[in-house]
Image 1 (cartoon, rainbow, N blue to C red):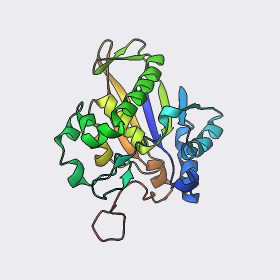
Image 2: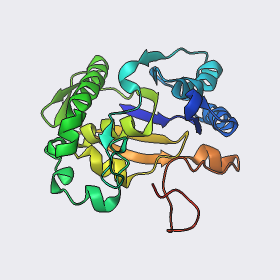
Image 3: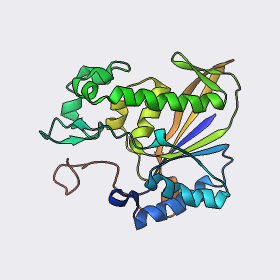
Image 4: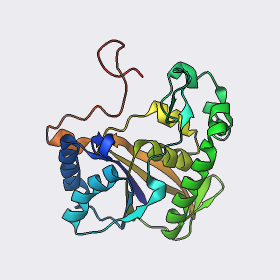
Length: 242
């Protein structure tokens, strides 16, 4: 089985849609995804994800299943670097989140005081529970830290969603802390992350990423990637710092 985690195009957050650049990215993305043999399309119920999926679905003459659990993983938590200000759980300074060893633990990351108070773990459990149900419907059943391949296949499932929730899904598949992925990965707008099963023994499946945040469809067209994915590369160069 192959999973495609597709981030929405350059966002217009105010209107939960796409900028003009984002719409162009979605068109370029459609030329890459639509020709694929995709068994099922899933899409977040948020506008920017649906707008990103629209050109692909139109070109492929397909429909997608809308799922609330694919919405961005927005749980409001306190920001240690800015007193009395809240934000998403993946927007912490490195010196703040790395100060708590719990965040590096695959299972105890949710015990961080700020995360526990905000209920981040509960939201995480709901998302991965719904995700595992989809995988089970397609033949792969969660069994401890692995998956039981009850109906092994090479189907491709495409998920049009968001950065934060993509890291949640990846952390579950790979049994690692989502906090590490939230702060250690970049997935540019309209990027594609490819995760496939590995079945090295009968009936036992694990997942492995073949590509993370791939934007080759933009490079082929000479389209520069949008910046809405990261912070400043060098302090003081005019890019985002907070």
